[in-house]
Image 1 (spheres, rainbow, N blue to C red):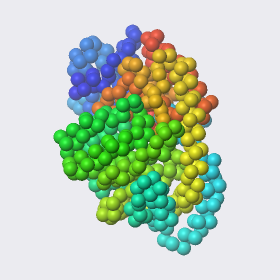
Image 2: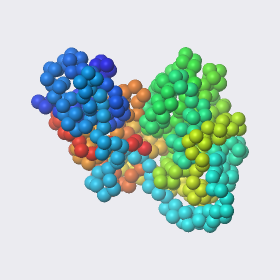
Image 3: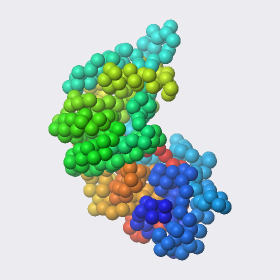
Image 4: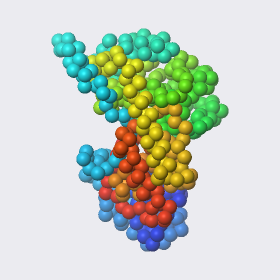
Length: 468
């Protein structure tokens, strides 16, 4: 227990206020999910021995955490992680002087209001129906299927299930096909909430590496499938979140063949698949190479508040999905589906606007790095939602703490890891307006300078946010 926490803490700076520094670090591990609520922390004696600090220092750190509501100490039961009741997963309020870089999502598309007005007439024609939509409106499923066909994967509407966003789609897929206790391969880094969903359904996560410049280690991924024979693999093969990498078509074909041989269900998240800036080529959807369940969404290209997603699967798989769904919900709201139909009718224009916004955001982040984080390079970014930035050392968690003190929420790199590593990386969204990005990078630069000056990040009063 103590050695695991010692590994999670990694390298951390401390001035004379060692206990405060340690308390800050443990709190960050809790806020970004690496320590779970209710988890038992090491005893004072064990952690003191692991960190080569005095027991009094550890006791003081635990006292600081307890006073803030981050641990509960019970005689005979030890010290357990907790969250203050009033702060559980509550994001910063709108209007606060806080910039939230945990969110990587473009604002609403300019045509959204007009599409909503048009959708009301379509909705009026549905008011005489019961209103439940277990698999989704046929018109919407037809448009989603047509989009897959246009991208090189012939698809029928019967192969589409409309959901309330991509995370809801993953929840339905895991309800139908998850196997508690079995291994699930995930990329490292990957989307944190997807990993949380897999853990919650009892899967044991097995990571495989992805980098912005090199992409997937194909040999490692194939060998992992062959040796682990996992129940499933969750992959983001197009504009990977957070690295922005795209898996080559030859690697997709090889992976599909190996997955078929090992009995591994491939779940491929395509929510970023069409967020192209200047990639220069367009791969076919993964399922064009072999069996795979695909997940898509309107949230990244139209608006995060439009909770429309979908699943593309084989007909027998669709039957299983629809069998499992009623235990979760009874369908996706009809108004949102009607709005999505209107937007999909003008998809090319929608994607062009999104691409231009991402291009502008990418330039703003690159300029901010050059101005405020000298020596930190902008990674290759042909598309996607965020830059996966190599900080050059294991400073991401400390930088995140320092940024919070300056009104900037930045998820540390290990939040995107299945095993608590990647503390030398930070994900910076390219989705915000240039003016806000400029201010965010200035605040990040202030935290960066304080970090390298050896200044201690102070306790934060900002609430934890979800990573989007």
